[in-house]
Length: 296
Ligand SMILES: Cc1ncc(C[n+]2csc(CCOP(=O)(O)OP(=O)(O)O)c2C)c(N)n1
Image (tube, rainbow, N blue to C red; front, side):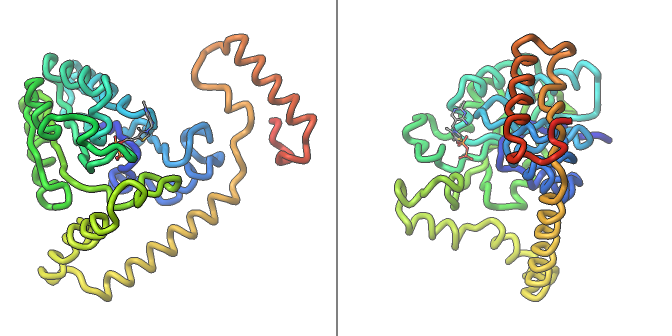
């Protein structure tokens, strides 16, 4: 059973990992080397994998939401036993794409699961400066989409909600929206300092008392399935695997220059040909700045 087509934002590498994308594939993408599925043409963390039915991540907020609905419509027309799932943040719901996608999904009755991570912030913009509705769940309901609000920091609650949503989406051929209430405990990105716009004790409270991994770990420890020793062994093993994947990826050559201009057009338009010629000329003039076989 194929089950799953994913159109994600940028905080869901866990989904891809779970589906079998390897640490080496993650590292190859981040280094944009010749084994990267995107041939080095995307920003780091913009993973994509045809093999895993995983659309390439787009940073343009919200654009993945109508893509997921379109893919779900295709699945419906082909009567496939599958649905799509798309993730986005509260900020994503402030885009027009979110509204168009929800309405289209509701009217066309397509099997799609919308998972909104309502983490309270779109970089430094708090939810209160984005919308005055009671979160996101009511917006789904307004469009006629079955919607549920879940504690997004409770792994088991999320698992159950998504499991049920999948059964409904495929069985009843309709869209489902899940609003996962959570908090972005880290900075938005490496270029952000969130202590500039929110109190440190608020961040600490979420990081300590509400951390979803700690909560889940407590539960499996209580069940006797996990222990402090298992945790530390696992962490050190994963750390080694990640470092190894990075070391391997950084030694692999970059994709050849010609790959930079392929895959969009059957016949590249004149402006693209000009850009390629001008890039090759620049490399010829400054060979010391590029690897020896870069012009291939
Ligand atoms: C169309 C568009 N507008 C603005 C940005 C800049 N931007 C990048 S991430 C982001 C905030 C997104 O917030 P949210 O969707 O809540 O996701 P979060 O990062 O909080 O998980 C913004 C405004 C962008 N990438 N794309």
